Length: 250
Image (cartoon, rainbow, N blue to C red; front, side):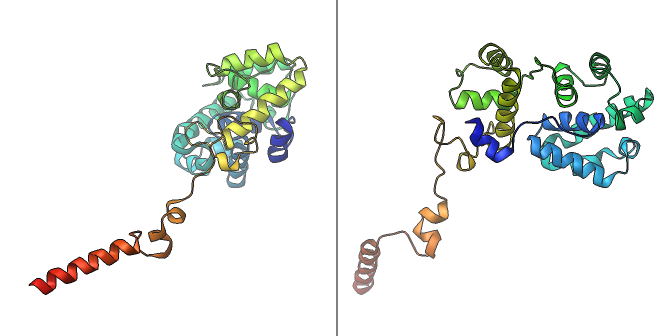
């Protein structure tokens, strides 16, 4: 199954880019797919010259650029981005974060933990992309949802339980990361919580939860297809005859 998904999303790899890029990507990927998050980061840097310009931008302007990724939460996420960048500049770490990976892994972990709104999962997301450790697994709801629907795990599996499942069942650390982030990409892009796009799913032949796409109303309704009534001809003929008889009696 992973091979089928990697044909669609590519193989998991450590992302290149600055620490700020990875912070932005980690925040955005929690609201949308990995690809949408990457496109949103690219859109931000096409609009703003540097992190300082992004820091002082209007939240509404940021929200417009990340709308495709974050949807209704765009304003909330835009505020979060500005707050984190303000913290970086306040601590005089902006230049180091923009270009370097000078901090060792533990120092980077401690610093990220102190950023506004940065919980353990976001910290791990950034560390994984910059300086991955063997046991860096994020409790990802997208990945857990795909695992449940494809019956890899039971229906009661939460994101945290799926992380534990990977730790216990997959012995190779790199294979664990590969599994987690490939399923996460699919869960965010196609196997969505409320409206899964089964017609676009590369796992259809393996998935017990797969639902074949239904015909559209236009294709299943002759009246909409050709503009004609769906009433059978014989019924229309009887109605016409009945109307004629009533007219003759008058």
